[in-house]
Image (cartoon, rainbow, N blue to C red):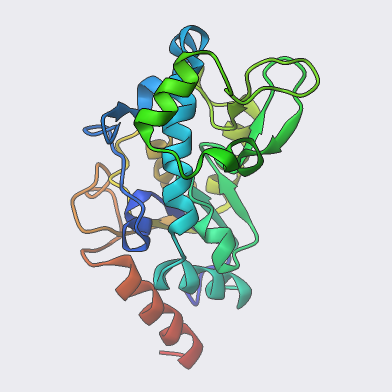
Length: 252
């Protein structure tokens, strides 16, 4: 890391488990009794937007309780010290930003803002649902199923949607190009808390290697990139990253 000129960190759900945010992966997309993937399908949203908002409110409750853990803080400090140039994350919890990281690319969008699909007006998600945060899922079901209170655009009255892409629509082209550019110029990528099994994010380490960069993996379980990785560390990110940060500062 001391010899690398452009280090990029790529983080997945594993980095936020210590902060109290459950991890999604390709084997488990359930949020309680709700299917998170179903909640983020355009085809289902058009039929029943209440499902999307019940899941969104439940997830937002969890994120509002979560705080950055030592792994998030170490990455923010390493960015501040000039070691890390950018963080690409699939997480929706905003914990990197709360820890102080500035150059964060949210690969799957942001859960903290919501937009109108017709006129593109954008608002904070919290402002849409703050009056519902003390409601149970059963209470929300009764309210929303009756067609009342679903967050709507104040200008055109369309149902709002959280700013993460629908699974059946794919990522915006601009976002895909942004993360590709970051991966191409990286001479070292730290892959943290992800098995690299979900969608195009798993292809980014290949771009790093194709341009003669190196890949270091910090993850408790095996990943799909282990055989190609230059370094593998099977340990908790909240343990490893603060040690790396300290060693860089002390010159070890």
